[in-house]
Length: 448
Ligand SMILES: *[C@@H]1O[C@H](CO)[C@@H](O)[C@H](O)[C@H]1NC(C)=O
Ligand SMILES: *[C@@H]1O[C@H](CO)[C@@H](O)[C@H](O)[C@H]1NC(C)=O
Ligand SMILES: *[C@@H]1O[C@H](CO)[C@@H](O)[C@H](O)[C@H]1NC(C)=O
Image 1: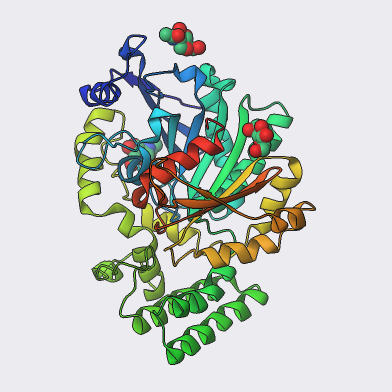
Image 2: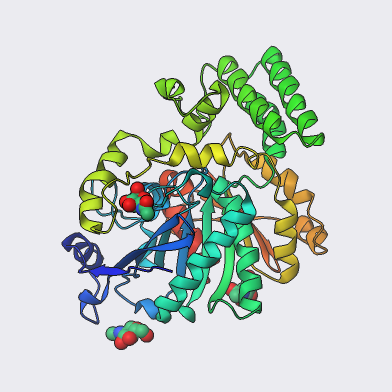
């Protein structure tokens, strides 16, 4: 196993960020640092990770949790999108992000599955093709990480995720729980948070019509058309025709687009940007996959972010192989997982709950692709014996700004399950509602 961690001094912007709070800094800020490296998780499969030590002006990183962030797709990059567009210390213009999670946690970004972001494979048969491989690859990475960064072995470790990353997070959390039980990984695993997560694809697809209809984005004819194609997806899934279901899923999205004048699947109050010409790419022999890739991965690596990652960032990181392009293998990552997209992971969440792992589900109110109605539907299918009690509870309002009466979210929790309804956010909760996302992370990691 090769592990090549590097560290570098904190850039001046981070120092500015620490000072901008006006607080007294109790120790030399040079201690805030970044470390990154590659881990060979299988033959010909290399995974890239990037760790930022927490930079709170009040606390040493050792007193704050460690959060691993997993992006969706599959094929979207955590070190790129999650880092520079959502929760990292800097935005895509390399300006400080006011709502970065780094104030309250150390952040570990991992480009997974292999082939995503700066991760790469050397042979095309090395791509992951199912959730089990995604999870076992991550176990190799986490073992190497905790063996190497020993300071983090005792720090509470949380996995936060988005979209398809939520499905991977569930699978990874369960394997991590087992590895800790077996003593193969030393880590203080404290919980998993599933954000707008692709846990039960069919429950998302079946709720698209009713959700859009209730929001005045479908008329009666449109609702009938969307419901018809959703039933076709259900039919394919009940016959376990997963690739066919993926194809029909793409068709359902097209029917929605036609009937809504191009609603944005990631935030229904905005418009889709026009689909580019990726469909003509040689990698895609089937048009529906090209469209799905465009919608689920490509928009997370648009030109500006690509230029940043393949320009100043790769230069700073120094260890990225010359012929490895950030995002260059994303389409192959996506295509290789085609048979896995539509498979549900509800039973994995049940296993986590039963094992006593803390599970948080959070969802943006304006998300269509993984709408909140669909999340509630799969949660009602859980076999967890405490579920009836969870369901009986009333939610509580949450205010990110204590001086304002504006409701940021509703939350409900019982034993080791919590649900956050995030208001005015779409699919990318931290991008849309940075303050609420930060507050939620602090609540989940027991800092408030
Ligand atoms: C912060 O924590 C690390 C790890 O426990 C320790 O080595 C370091 O001395 C601490 N720094 C301060 C200023 O307390
Ligand atoms: C594996 O791929 C990387 C990135 O494309 C490349 O730099 C490296 O030389 C390859 N290694 C082998 C053994 O082919
Ligand atoms: C799990 O959540 C419960 C309830 O919120 C909390 O009391 C407990 O400390 C949490 N466990 C961990 C390891 O964070």
